Image (tube, rainbow, N blue to C red; front, side, top):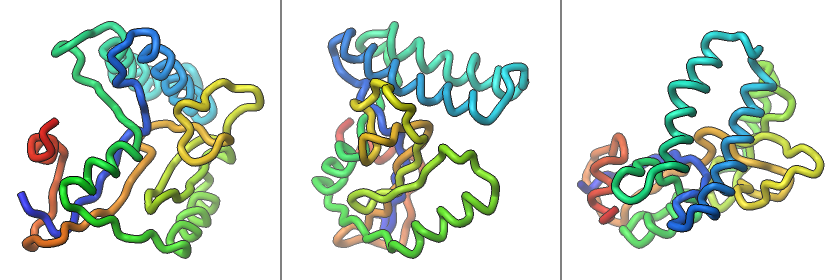
Length: 181
């Protein structure tokens, strides 16, 4: 696989630790932010919210916390860990234009996104997050600065290999195999 362009979108989580207590703590911080995001946008009785909480995130939480070894399929890592991995694989990161980030911020405001949702850029990654509540203990999953916490798919970057053909990588299965994951 030799794509010209690869867009990586990843959950900014560091709950791939082999030690249960570390993994549990990181997962707790991350999923607290996810569920807080649901709480600020959807009523508790909303069927879509219940579906996501039970079917999607509920299973994901159980897998991250309760499963060990090959039984654990959810292994999120931070966007900085992915950045190192991609650079080692020969990709070069393209710069993010400040005007583009500002344009997205304006659109978020125009489209009525919740006031606590934020968009930022760090090391040429777009970062989505939610403003941190005062006193919250979630510095371990911070997206860019201590006042942000991650939720959902919160990191995206555009990577281009030094040499390649005109193909675009879709999905991560082949990439993970290529990178030896």
